[in-house]
Image 1 (cartoon, rainbow, N blue to C red):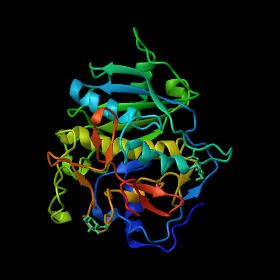
Image 2 (image 1 turned 45 degrees about the vertical axis):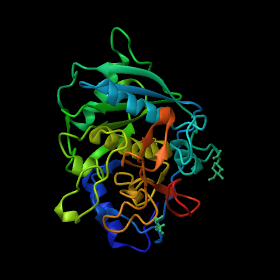
Image 3 (image 1 turned 180 degrees about the vertical axis):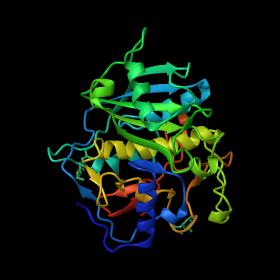
Length: 331
Ligand SMILES: *[C@@H]1O[C@H](CO)[C@@H](O)[C@H](O)[C@H]1NC(C)=O
Ligand SMILES: *[C@@H]1O[C@H](CO)[C@@H](O)[C@H](O)[C@H]1NC(C)=O
């Protein structure tokens, strides 16, 4: 099993935070968690599969009441991931190709470079209420794949399910310890084992924690710069950051037995956890997000997407460089 050597105070904090968050979560923003990019991080492979199906079929479950403009931002983000997506550099697909795609499994398969949104389901009636527990996410997926009419396909071969909750939906530990998480379904609940992720819209609940840096992180974190969101929506642009985080970790550790650092799969430190809050060169110490670009309207971004979109995405642990990295780096 992996070991963090040398034991670094930031990583101890990170491990403690991950433990508090239970498992494989996007922790809430806290600059304490940042690594400086130069220390030893023991990212280890644990023999399990990576998400390699080409394409990998994404199934979206819109839980709660969703605004079509918000949905189109998230759809455009997902459509921007694939290597065939048309967007100027540095692009979302560069971000994917130059880090998650570099992780392989014991069969020699790389993380996929192709995604399609293969199905969508609207759960506008809040099938499991407006206050969810973690385990409810599997039940939400079960409801979607057994829905009548228009069930989502149950796709155990190349499928991954994304449960996206509207701003009025509460989740256990949301804001306190997590902004999103990924795991896999249990056959006893859903019928098959498939990877899934949950991401919530934090706009009304805790934007300073889960939509940072588009909202102030709070006095305890100093005077971190608040950036203007590239698609004009703090909650949704914040969801893009967390969704990117979860997709990168789900792809490299879909069954929680592939790529992570740390001693225990119940508190893995995954490839995005290591770079929380880092968006550009010079980021990673204290509250610095690093160098990012400004659009003519003053909004902040670091990558381009399809349909002329811009997005801000956090950097990821690059296995070749042994550092946090994003395609907007000049290094
Ligand atoms: C697959 O991963 C290996 C190891 O990191 C890397 O050298 C190779 O370029 C990757 N393949 C693609 C298509 O990205
Ligand atoms: C950030 O950008 C400025 C202006 O282009 C540049 O002078 C500076 O060196 C950059 N910082 C890093 C850490 O690359």
